[in-house]
Amino acid sequence: MEILQYFMKQWDRILEYTLNHAYLILIGILCSLVLWISVGIAVRNNSKSAGTILGVGSFLMSVPSISLYGILMVIPGLGLSRTSAVIGLVLYSMLPIVRNVYMALNGIDPSILEAARGMGMKPRYVLWKVQLPMALPIIFAGIRVALVMMVGTATLAVYIGEQNLGRLLTYGIERSRSDMIITGAIMVSLIAVLVDYLMEYLQRKLVSPGIMDYDKKPASGEVEYDGI
Amino acid sequence: MAFDWSRVLEVLRTSKATLDVKALLAQHLKLVGISLAAAVLIALPVGIMLTRPRFKRYLPKVMGVLNISQGIPSLAVVAIFLPLAGIGTFPSIMALTLYALLPIARNAIAGIDAIDASIIESARGMGMPALKVFWQIELPLALPVIISGIQTAAVVTVGTATIADLIGGGGLGRLIFTGLSFFEPELIFLGSALAAVIAIALDQLLGLVGKLLTTPRGE
Image 1: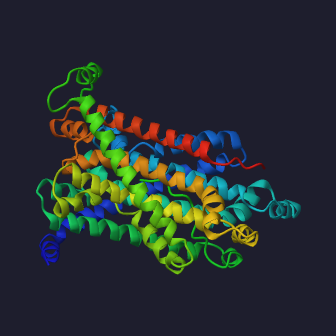
Image 2: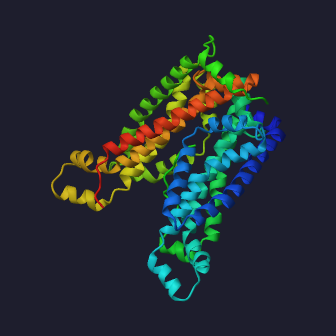
Image 3: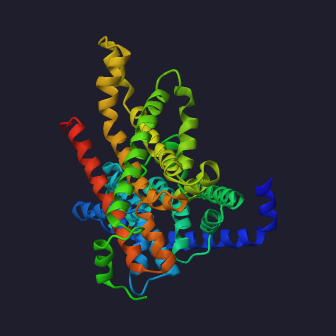
């Protein structure tokens, strides 16, 4: 009840934090998508550079998020800013997105590609009309992993000057206010679940129905999880 | 904001009562070690038990919960333990252990569940008792996935342990949060960099252990 009271009394502030949280994630995921999908496509036929890039990605993944923000904070020119917060999120989403794009593009049955080429498709058409649509379910799985992680990591961006739901958690700890902490935790988890559902919906809309039938179910993407 | 490298070295060398880097490092390693060991001891048996035929029908539900729980931020888990358990080392260890349980249990279940059923069937067909099937077939085959779960948990725990300073856990988080309060970027950098080094070293070490324990597969 305490929590409900707190929520009613402070709903405008909670709304502001929630919108800020969502906004940061939106910018983060848009930058990541543009950057990392292009990287994934660029290295698709080059296993050597793909290995290097995936190595860098898993190295970044093993840097704790608060450490990454701490290091970004002292880089001159970045400091305490939204840019640093976005850069942190983008760096963390490198591994799940690049890896899934690369593996999905390379996991397509070669006979399908041969058939496409045999019909006279240029390489560019093979990529856009055959490879990418077929790789979409796995690419989506990577994006979902990245997004769910981003929702959690974004709470730590409060130390770099963001005003998002992480504020409820840090203020709550400073003032020993369990109502603030619990409200913050519930809101963050809610966003994570909502974002995941939204992606599932998008996936169902965007992925060609032919591929969905092929596997009997939408590829929920059993992709190894690599931590926050 | 001026960043002074000599200040980093100065903090490293001098040991004040509150910011003794060596003591904080030791405290950090202690937090990570105890929580990780406890998490492995709890999560592995529970995860393995859930893959046994008796509990297998609950598996999809358990995996669903574990998947969603990835979205819970470390800051929230640490924060929740403040009203529940108070301040100090013990509440920090409890929070860290709870948070490390999830990836370990998840990977243990996923690793064992992914084994081709025909392999297990052929082992049974050769007359292997269930216990032997588990120790000689299932566990070795699932080991790489299990180890990678422990790697994930280790990295997450090193990072979360810095945050645990907010509820009195101590460790390298003390450097980061002191730096944030007094705005000394050198302290923030030192704490962050040390935590990153520990995380990466632990990750590589566990990867090596995994490689040594795994039976090589000829391909």
